[in-house]
Image (cartoon, rainbow, N blue to C red; front, side, top):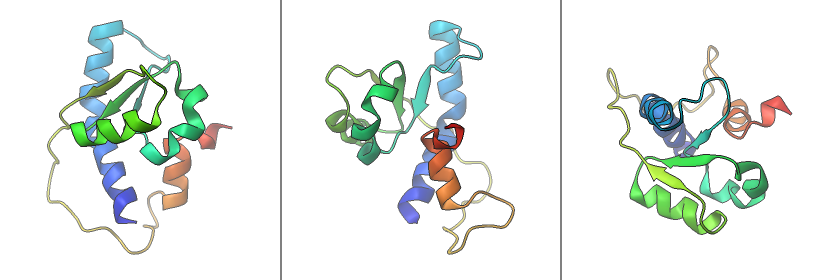
Length: 115
């Protein structure tokens, strides 16, 4: 649970820097272009689906974990996450009633909710 919550926080913190990066580099609007902080353990199963996308990581350590699992030559960019706003919270033990469950978040992360 803690690892999933940490991944969700890294993804959220990278949204703004990734959008700015993509806009400046490609000007892409309304078209998928990148994946933010893919779970390294899931990359091998999704190699073909990830092929057209730039992968973004929140640190060199995360980039290294993703690179080991990704296809050779896969483009992986490291961006500095946005600093958290407001106080940080501890990982909830149970899913919040007003938010996503862990299962829903994982499905959304990997686009499985659109299949």
